[in-house]
Image 1 (tube, rainbow, N blue to C red):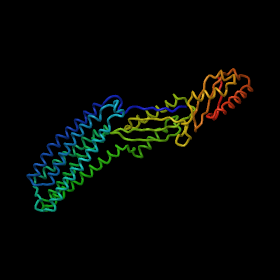
Image 2 (tube, helix red, strand yellow):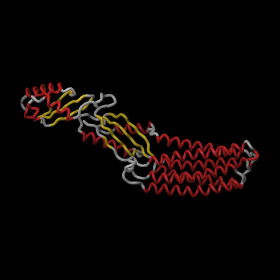
Image 3 (cartoon, rainbow, N blue to C red):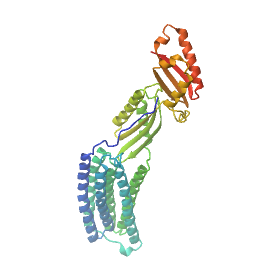
Length: 392
């Protein structure tokens, strides 16, 4: 039996315009809010003398910059597969997620540096007022609302990029809580607490940025899916009728999609078409029952090619038939062979011959004689390990 593969392109043949429209709407709503909050917090922070609020305003404006990145990535990542990108454009979303994480880390470093400098120079410390409290409270409520709004669509489309942007919004809400505490502390006489709050905001932003960048980098180097999902894939494959075993199961992520490659072992006596049908069933089952799986390549094996001897050195059909024909040239029945099937197993070739039934009908001795003569001929062909005769 020959090996077979089955494969379906990622993302199919059509783009997902609804996904892009939803991403566009969610991100534009967030962008308007980020612009208003960013400018508002910086102005209020300056006039009310709150360093933490200014840092929080810069954080909000960084959200605005990453919103633009999200829109660009979402537009191009949703494009269908093409000749140059047969697996689709999902990695654009991954790269954008890494860039988003890097941007957060850079913003955090700048904010932390300025806050620490002021802590070591007490004359530079500011004294925020009540207006800073009000703006921080407004920021907490509005950014938490945007986080939940964005996460609805991040989960719907399994988009790591939207999820990253949602967490960027939540980081702004959390940082505003820290600002609120810092401002209250400063108003109570602990003038250094506002700067400490700014450092706390910076560290939190850096942690979120690192997590996003690290996750995206792992995806770019084709890290496999988590063990739980890999085991579920394994069990789904083994549940398909006709799959005897599997090996070389490999998985990786591309944007919101998961890709699977696997070798499945089937009965070596099956026809090529039946083996292909089994592989198609495996593919359809994985895509139907695991939402993230978008592409499956199935390699059909008649045996465990990780353990069995290689057949790579063996000749193909034309060469082996020429060799066999030379060996059984003196067998008259050889001229009536109706079909020849070759089985490449464990580094050897096994031959099935189909002969007319009338050659042996009601002639037991004729059957034994044909089997003896064909077996002796096959033994002289160095690549053949055995031969089986069938009659019809």
